[in-house]
Length: 71
Figure 1 (tube, helix red, strand yellow):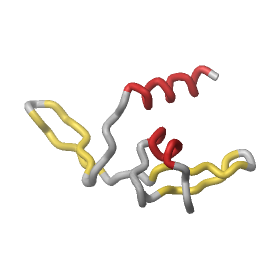
Figure 2: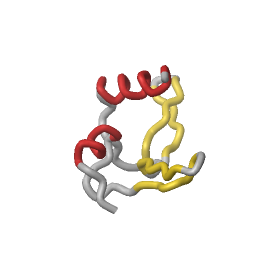
Figure 3: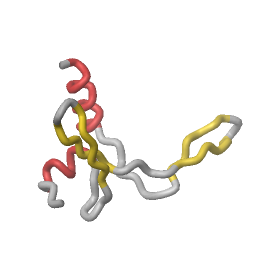
Figure 4: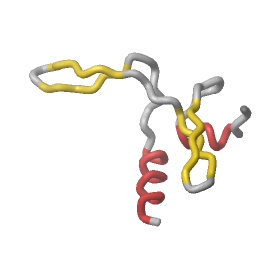
């Protein structure tokens, strides 16, 4: 499946990244595949640590999520 580069960048999907395809209300929904993670204690606090590489969280991605929730 080829996903245009601007859309991949928007969701933080690297070239060749894995996706999940699901159905919601008669539409196909394409999402980045989840990354396995574990909980570790660091400096007395529990933190979630991914087992693989994850893209950095950008201000643009946060803005996109907030805007989509307001609709």
